[in-house]
Structure formats: C-alpha cells, structure tokens
Image (cartoon, rainbow, N blue to C red; front, side, top):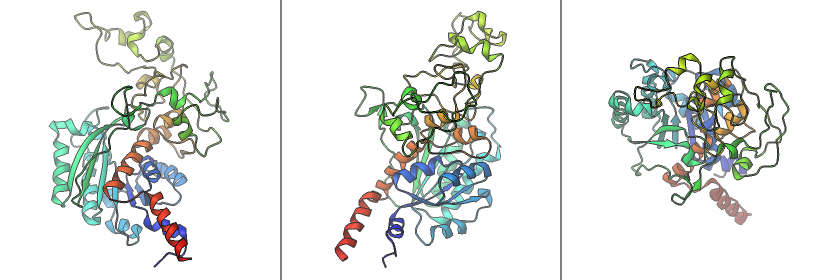
Length: 403
C-alpha cells in the first residue's frame, strides 16, 4: 500500500531511532543529518527537553525517568515499525575523571535500565555513549558489567574510544562508544575523516579559528544582543554552521573574576598557567609550579588555559563559562567562550537555539552532532540501508513510471 503523500512515503522508508537520555539533542541532530527519523526522545531534565523540542518539533518528547520507562512507550512511538537503533548516553558522573569518582553512585547503574529496554524492545542496533573513565575505573569493572549485560540478552557488543576532532568536530573530546547488535552483522566503527596534516588520507583537523573566526570580538560588550557576522563564511566548516541561519544569536560570554584578572592577561595563546610569570601567580599556584628537581609540574596544565586558534579546542565541559576551571579562555580576548562559540566548537549549527536554564550544561553534556552524523551514516551501511536520498530518488522514479 502506497502512502497518501510523498511526505508519508519518505517518512516510512527512513531508518528510525529512539534517543534515551537525549539532553539538548546533539545525538539526534547528527542522526537526523545522516537520514534517521527519531519518533521519540526521552530525558528527565525539562530544560533540556525545551531545547530539544524547539529544534526537533517532529519528535515526541517525554520527560520521564528512564528507570521507570516502560518499553511499551517506545514500541508505541515506533508505530509498528521495527526499531533500527536505540541510543543514548546514560549519566556518567560516578566514573567521570572530572571530580570525585564514586563507585556506588546510582548514576553508574543507569546502563542497566538502558539494557533492560534494549532486551524488551529488541532494536536491530544499539549505540551507547559515555566517558572514557568508564574503561579504567576499577580496572574496567563497569565495562565488564556492560558487556555481560548485553550478552545476557543476546547482543554482541564492542566498545571504542573516539576523538571528536578525528570526525570533523573542532574539539579534542574523547568519549567511549558502545555498539551492540542482534543482527549477526560484524560490528565496526567509522574510520576517521580528519587528522594531523599529512597523515593518511584524511582532511586536517578543524581548528578553533575555522570554527569561530567569523564571530565578532566583543571588546567588553559581553551581554550584547544583535551581533553581525564579521564576514561571509571563509571555510567549509563556517558554511556548515551558518547553513539556513541569517542572524547570529547567543553570542554572550562571561568576564573574569578579580583574581582571574590578575592572571588571564599574562596567559599566552595556546598555553595555561605555565606561561604566566611567577610574580603574577596567585600564592596557591606558586607552590605548584615546580617539583623537587626544579622541573615544572605536569598537572593543572589546562587551568586558565587560552585556546589556540590553529588547533582544535580541548573538551568543552559544562564549565566553559568559568575561565578558571579549564581551557576556556578566548584566544584573543580576556573572557570566557560565548554560548555560540562553545556550541560551534561542539558542531551545533547557528540555527540551533538553546532554551531554559543551565544552557552551558546543555551544551557541555551534548554529543557533538557531526560525530553523531558520522556514526549515523556508518550505521546505515551496517543496516544495509541505502542513503535516504538514493531511496527517495528510486521512489520518485517508480511513481513517475506509474503515472
């Protein structure tokens, strides 16, 4: 039976995904760009869901604790169609390398409910994203638990640590991805598309300058609205982030504290505290500069770090508004990154608007859309699905022959 409209027909042939722990929607956005349709997205944070819904109005959003989510809601959203992909990033603070690790943190075991839903819904493929610290915490204890849980429900699983910069994201973000399947198809991961200049057959990493170089310097107007772009897009990445967007928004940043103002002006581009003359360091840092041999210590290297324009950024965390917390000083100005600058370094397009409170957290916790897009295209190949464009072209041709 042919659907009543081409829109319905195209919708029917798209691979479908359900996004658990969806946050602001970075993962769904990348999968959308790869050709997936997401009929349902679930998260417990209402503010992140406001952002998600504003940017994905076609998706049903559900504000619910995944530990209480019945599989029937996922199956209902799929409308009788077999689910191609169930994906999500269960909260990971318990074994994150940032802050104190807590073995008994209940967030460590959210993956159990994720796996429970996999067993009940039986998607063809599963993708789960998390922090690399999961691999090493207690000698890989949680990794073994995850492998065992998938094995018990009949899914083969593999894991790999991916660096976002190797897939076109201007950020050295490291995350572990688990892929699992019941299809019998061998599990593989996408090959890098970007890398160091001259290495292999890949494009150069996208730099901070390419990512934000067309955004205006603030010159102290940190809360101003209504900025204009400095110039037309000057590289392919700027063309990508500015696609279908005419107005620059959310270009507001934080200044620096009184203490930070005594340090930040002396931080050289591409360096952190080590580049600051000793006499300008706060007392608490002076004792940390050298060890017994007289050599500079190797810790705290990204505190008060100023990004380099000719390299990718370091990992954008939820704390990018605080220059004292990590590598978040603008390359040329003594301020934090703006919301839009951070979103670009995560590979969100400028049309993507963030709503509610804790916008920095929404951005910092997201999966970079371009990384998700690469995974989406790779999964389409594993699903043996032609690209959406190719399939639509065939349907267009078929309907034309019938007329």
